[in-house]
Length: 367
Image (tube, rainbow, N blue to C red):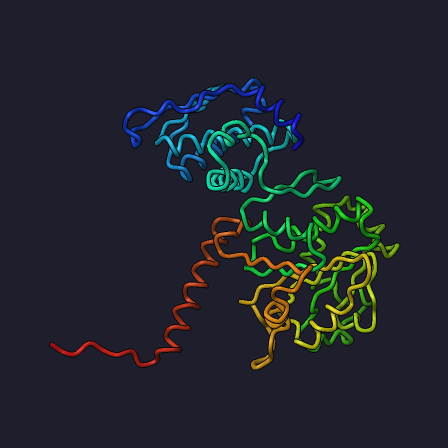
């Protein structure tokens, strides 16, 4: 969002900061008034579902009536809720589209991060300005990071030639990588987009599958295709595939190539061997950028086979020009239930590791 957009949004929304009583824990009321009823209804959501979601997340009560809103809660919670509503209003004022619960969660996390990074007076003056980084493409428009990990990821993508992104499913690591690659393509900073993924198991035995090379690996690259169609018009994707501007390159066919002036994305990298990863990394040519994503908790290699992703992150730690971000279960943005599922599995795995390290825990002596 530009400075002028932020100024316009601030001028369109009237609200007073919370008047803090003598007791800091006492509830306060924060009134907000939006100047556009239609945009206010987008902020509140269908049947005020966004309002209810913010109430649950921030432990406040919010009453919406027309274009008016009254927030009640502790001073800190009410102030945070006010910033969230202001951010959401600025977003719909700029984009004019319906908000999802993921957008609401993103605004909550952004407001929380602002509270820890910026002075209170700065936050009050710029409550509707984005502080998380964003990616913009022609079809999708601006896509803003929804948590600090995604914010760091986008910053690393902009400042490094090679970026590793590790983390569980649903954290947006592949989706944001594709969005960044498309934006570089549209801005003329890259001539080609090359997508790769370990197609089957470690050996990548593709020969028995019917069709040409693209048809052989299409099923394995479906998540990347979905992201491409999210960020690009279908006709542009199809034309790019026909002209070679967008290339599907199975990892098995990358050997011997030098990739110049391209954005190269390797997905599901946890299923590469050490030799495959080293081969892939050394394909990087002049003017190119490389993004490698994977989930070390979902390695499908044969027992005893070392993951190329895990090894590369360790070996290349601290090398100039290489960025690394590690997403956690709290960074899952796909669906709140997905986050809870990932957390449950990680807790179970941690318990299994503890049991394996201590197979015969010492028992308490009998009384």
